[in-house]
Length: 392
Image 1 (tube, rainbow, N blue to C red):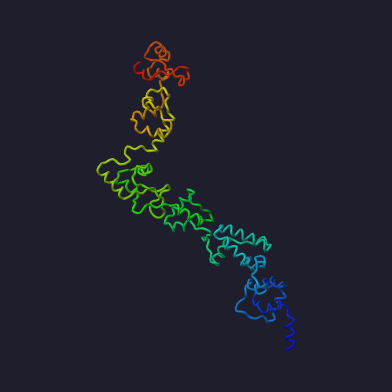
Image 2 (cartoon, rainbow, N blue to C red):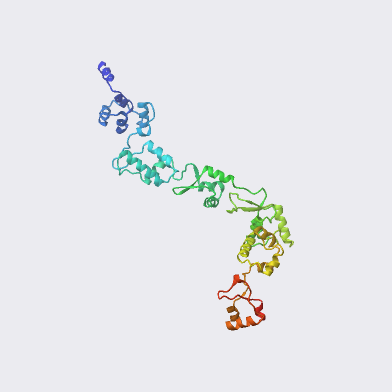
């Protein structure tokens, strides 16, 4: 009895630790933790004096029992290579890194990151974490490749508002920020909340303006243009989300009372609010054409059309004065400027030679050259007045 007590007193601390907590613990883990050769630990456990446990204690628990604290990442042992499979074991630091990468990068990049880390720890250039191994390990710890961090996927966003097309349209038009994570598009939570706050919904009871197009016998998309010009009473443009009509630049709605008035006026044959009103899109086109084909200042027809104030000085002046002009006047203003015909053109139409035309032009008062140096013909001759040609 005394000899046994004396032998226990001479036992090293690491030996007492192995006998108390080292039941079936991996030898490399105990050797790394206690700083002892694996052979010494194996001989000690072979004596049969190790206390039996229900299950082996993991390395993190053994480290806490030995040091009184949890191990840091650099205090874990090197991953063991499983015999026959060539694979290395997964330890908690690597699992924590895996969990932090899920949802931030795709599986391919996760596998590349873990492979580089594993090769650095083991010194084995052939060590590798394959894509399949990463996916299997993710499933074992309760993670999925569809899990994302810091945002929601476009599929989740579509389920929330009831329309995938609206979400994709917002991303394509740069209205909604999103980043690519593997095969998924991820929308940050902050950007998603801000985008939803910026959407406007129609007032309660308002009806879709496009629903009046067929009853009003309008086959084109002019109704929304009339609303944009302010010619449709109570019309408001909204950009809601969810199921139902939703255009990229907004959807027009109208008060139900105003819709009934429009339909009643249509059935009674009364003019619509936009009848006789200029359309801004058309005015922009005609203004550009008028500027390109603007006639010289000495054009008497243009002077009589614009009157004493003269030609418009800018687009706003043009918008105020152009719509009230007669159709013929509008047509003249946008016609290409043709002050007359060249000698060759007159000769061709009259079936005469060039010299005959010039001779008659010089002798007759019926044809005379216009004195406009800015429109001189390349041959040096001024053009002949067009109005005098039929008479000649």
